[in-house]
Length: 561
RNA sequence: UGGGCGGUCGACUAAUGGUAGGUCAAGUGCCUUUGGAGCACUUUGUCUAGGUUCGAAUCCUAGCCGCCCAGCCA
Image (cartoon, rainbow, N blue to C red; front, side, top):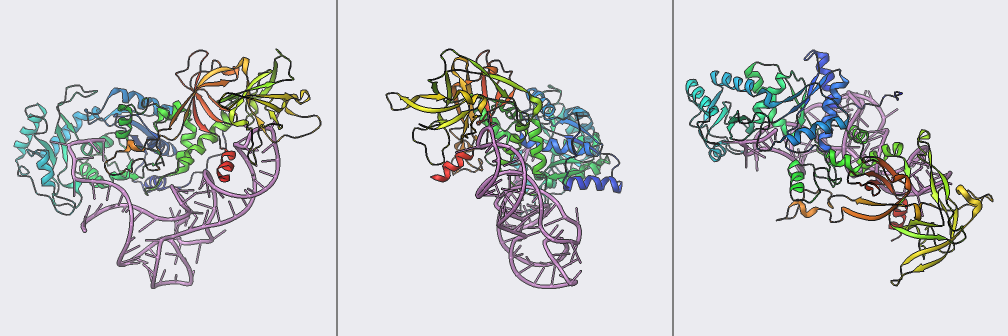
């Protein structure tokens, strides 16, 4: 593959930070990690983190580990572990090491012993409610636990017994002894271990105590010699604690750097809420094409390139912004425009009969596969007396600036002939169900020898050759720009767009699509990009609309009102 | 109200004391066998008020506004 011109790399603070660390000698290598918790499917927000973690390391000749942050057995599952690996690869990245925080449970346990021996950690008998009470508030300092000053021996004994299962869940914790009066709540003797009798997806029932995020994450980073541990902004308050643990232990000084999460209009990026949509069957699953998950977007027809380009264009900073959905769609169209073969499909069929076309005649018309890609070649499409066109492409009474078919008007059938509408047939309801036309035999292929022009070109499918298909038309999943914003007493599902899915069960496709393979992407000319769904059956394909083409007629029409 | 982090076109993001630029969106025109794509052009911005400086988005001071933190979630 020919390498194209190097993409412009706008500077950002992460890139500068890494470059600076290397220059000053703070680190001599670059090691990053992508640390998903296996409690849900990856979404476009994770794609940003992935592009940053993998992309930046790669730029500086460093490595990236995939590390599952599996310290909470109650929420985690191997189904997620598998999907995450698949999605990271699909996005186009590969990891150096594949690790689990649970791989380090023994080491982390030993380090806890070390802190206890150093008088830096203690077993607390306070229950959850009491811990909260003692923590104080944002404006008031906390109180020290009455168990805070136990002897090292007693702490060691109690901690061992916690590990051995001598105490009920939630009855005791191991806490770091830091400062109950700190203005940073994370430093008010944070909990390092909780007692939890839950089966872990990897360690099974070996452990009855589990380390918290704060106690496990930095230590896992340090074990892996991570130099730049990038995470989202809300962890900034945890940084002092991250550093405190590493300093007390005297281990490899990994460093945490925070950046802003991705947010997109009309899109929810909360694993908890996404899980709720799945559980409540508001969507067909994690890979429902309306979901912002990578698996959903894949099924919808989004390409990894488009997603990566989008992420790069959005950039990274420390502000909490919200990107317009249109930007994502732009990059999807941009990529698909270059690569998706064009094809003709009629979604809402209207029968056309060409009165002067010979009965029973079929012509194979040449059609270009992709005008953007000369290498894509061409195909033939059968033409005959009876065709389908789009209902939208005929108006008995055309509004101003409507250039498509209407009584007496001539249009071009793409790759076919010029036709002129002569008469219409209506049903009992007064709806047009058939349009009779004549064609000009001299315009085969779409050009008139006399040089006359038509204002419009419309797509069509030969009725006798058409492949019946189901087409799933998607709109935004939510009708509110901020789906999380809700009225009193409501929850976010109230913002679900009731029209996010329209199923068209009788679409007519050109015959080349009869056996299209699942995952294949096409442009249906003049309509949009569509992707073959795995639900397809032989002879009855199912397509998902990835994204519509930009429709300037829709704009004109809207403006006219 | 304690602490932390931020405020640049409608959106996202550059400019690192020296011409406020790019992408998306919006608009206008050209072109077109997709009302697609493409091309050209255009509109709109440094939170506020002071200060330092020849010169400030950038440095200083004071405000204002927004986000995050009181899980034994991550």
